[in-house]
Length: 302
Image (cartoon, rainbow, N blue to C red):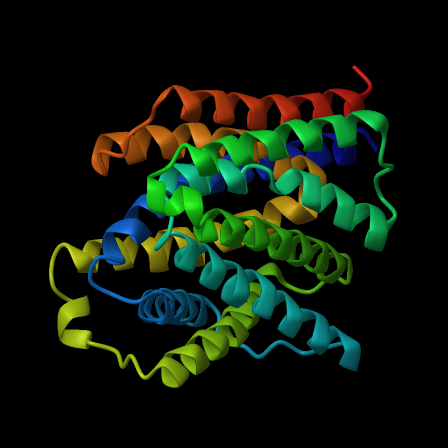
């Protein structure tokens, strides 16, 4: 019995470490995506990124995923559609209209929507007063970030709204992954299958837009390095580690590691993209993080 407790504690520790590492990597992906968007469309970037992730996961394990129930196939397909296709399509499109720093801070508000989705669909978390106080503060921070951008973005905050929609979709993906995880399917096979459905979505958008895929340009430096980072590290490896974290420590604890995301993103964006970070940006970031902390404070009953 004592050995089982020790194993459980070690597994949970690995889950926390996996999510922490994942968030550190994902917080820097906005910068790579922003740089690639100077030469490629969002659908072109996402097709290459998803294809690389799918290829790596297929090489590791090419066995088919055998479903226990027909409904499980629908859950996996929906998770792939939400987490691999729709979330990244919205996020990358948002980067066309707003800064990487803004997207990083807005995505940090994901725990609110994850908590709400978990409450509605999983009945795991009660919604208390501080949840709504924290949500109001964070939304105020996001508004400040929107109007601290350039005049073009300030009068047409399309990018920030798209980023907000992206984290709502991510909350649904998180809940679906939690449901699938409880059914005992192998993490790697589930993640690989999600990438397959996500790639279908990105390919369909590519065909509809008629963008084509300039392979000769993809393999040029420095684009190739960014694609390899996004496809192999941020996609294949990080989705495995994120889904492992969801299974071991749950969607709520995993999502709260997003606190680190805006800080890392802002530092990297300022350093490598020379994005401005003024007083209003700082106030907006502080409001968003304060709201997250207040919500977590109440949830833990500290």
